[in-house]
Amino acid sequence: MENKGPYNAMITAVGHYVPDRVIDNKYFEQYLDTNDEWIRTRTGISERRRLDKDKPTSYMAVRAIQSLLKNRNIGIEEIDLIIVATVTPDMIYPSTACIIQKELGAKNAWGFDILAACSGFIFSLTTAMQFIQSGSHKKVIVVGADKMSAITNFEDRNTCILFGDAAAAILLEPTEDKNIGILDSIMRIDGEGGKYLHQLGGGSLNPATHDTVDKKMHFVYQEGKNVFKDAVKGMADVSYEIMQKNDLTSDQISYLVPHQANMRIITACAERMGLPEDKVMVNIHKYGNATSATIPSCISEYWQAGKVKKGDYLILSSFGAGYTWGSILVKWAY
Ligand code: UT7
Image 1 (cartoon, rainbow, N blue to C red):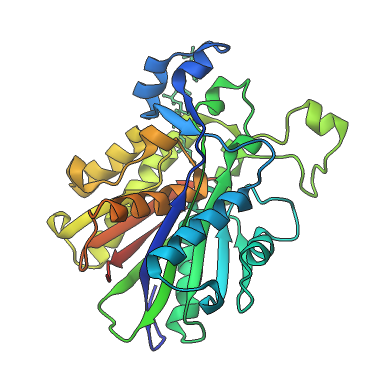
Image 2 (tube, helix red, strand yellow; image 1 turned 90 degrees about the vertical axis):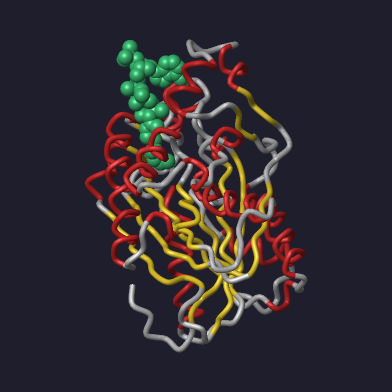
């Protein structure tokens, strides 16, 4: 995506929040026909986090943003815009951005939600980037937050073992240096994939009724095998494409930051790019698939561990419901 604005957008802070409650694979063995070995070998997941029933997505998002503000040592009043990536908003409306803005007292910020499922964070980051590149905004927060336990059918072994709850945020600020920050973005959608991964209930097509609830239409539905096949190809292709397009070789890339849906998808993507294991950010074993929070939580954890440094090339890649997918190239700025 060509930058026609006067600035580049650079990530200047990160922060994340995960709930304390850990659900390990043994938990599911107690009541479902599944086992730890199957889950680990087929997905790479050992445990995931679950937020309390009475707490919403915004609870985690607010805490992720508070941690980001602390890391950057700034106050919330400096924030111009808050973009929330989520498929589990607190409610249909008002937007979760409005709820977060109120909770944080972000009196100088406006905001909105973006729904692109597992690609929500990269779609939101690409959107936020435009506000910075144009010069219209100086400090934009993108928070990816999902309480997947709110839309998971815990009796469906095909899906319930996959998902977790988490939130993570990044801050974008402008720089006149066109060689640093977000250098490129490739975003794609293909509505043909909608049939394999969706949540049919609760929208205008199937508003909530006793019948939609009885049919469990308010839960995630996934035909895993089809999504798996398309995700391997989609994510690997676009990750490779952004590398090629920017004349980068695998040895110049510091990290692939993949969406954490399945370790086998992540490995296939890294292999296609020629990247060794230690150049791939992974936290799927701890958190499962936390949808919009996977990519920023990886970055935040690796940054916190001192593993990301100025000048590193990061390729962020995702694939999810829609289908939605894409890649972003970042040269780390701090
Ligand atoms: O984040 C958005 C994008 N989503 C993804 O990228 C997810 C993509 N899909 C996947 O990650 C994988 O397809 C899954 C992890 C969901 C499933 O793995 P799979 O290797 O594709 O398994 P499968 O669906 O082909 O199922 C193989 C077998 C089936 O049994 P039969 O029909 O062969 O007898 C399933 O019923 O495994 C069975 N199975 C399970 N067995 C034990 C499915 N879930 C489980 C389970 N425990 N939890």
